[in-house]
Length: 474
Image (cartoon, rainbow, N blue to C red):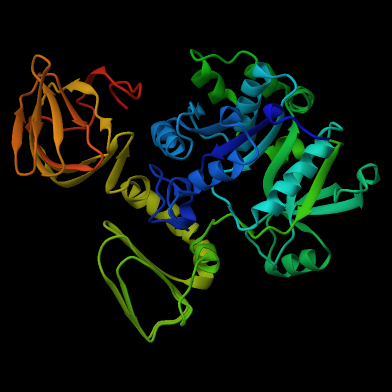
């Protein structure tokens, strides 16, 4: 089958927390929104990879509603001029509801669509082989199969599920496509060794299918989700989504359907799910160390040392992980990096803030970091990206003082009066006064903001106009 590009669609699943990559990955800014193995974030790398096969207007992304604006911002950087199709989940419900929501949106647009499902946090070194496997998956999907891309293992990994292939599908003799015999959950080490020896494949979670075939399968095997999806609108999505079961694509559909195929491929694939996988896939020095940021090592070998802020100096260490962020430090045996997930689960009960929030808060227009705060004041360092602007807003309970420390600020204050501030200049914004901060230049704008008042919470914002379509509490 030679598929018209206009009929090819792709969905990026951009959910999940990535708890094994704590403290860098947090609930508010999970691993797929981070740059862990290059200049672009994992989401951006995925979008650029898919762009080679899919028209940008046919690229959909499903993410949690709290990540909507960050996802929009990141996609707009690598797909300029394209209005990205970002679908938001009111709550996390595993992969099947997310795939169903996106596929139904595509199906309504194009009944003949062929849809590929891809995670936002995978690393693929050989993109030519990836594209070839994708095309093979489309070929068998044309015969109304549900197709998976299976990865040929390079070792007995215990962090992935496995697929047991059956006989080759002879109808497509020129393609490397097999029937799926069974799915296997993440195994122990001994079983993983046996599976690799017997020719099993890693389950990458990448699917390709006709939108119509998916909807028919959903109706047959998950009628509750199917019937609810048909009723979804902007007004009732939250209510309907809450009724969906927390169920994966594998368990909910793939393990039940009869016409299911897998395409084996060796493409340098990794899901970058743990710090050890970051280490294994990264560029290491002569001593086998992968270092990021301010790091100085003495007699240290085979280790991952990652600094986001301060200098890390090590002496006489081997096979360890050290991750430093402004508010947390992780130290772990590299061979036990999978157990960081358990550590995070325990930490969440005693200190949820350090699991959920970053010190640096990301917004569509830039970032801010709280430098100091108390009940009646807060000090922030605010960075506004070039050609970006905050909403036209007002605060009921606080006033603000702004000092420019880098760049040039354009300010709308009081009765739509416009002014500019340069380095070492300042202004005062009384409470209950409309105002807007803008950066009209091609360089970052950095200001120090001092808030004073009886209440300095982030929800004290009344928005009158917002370029990004946010409401007052977003």
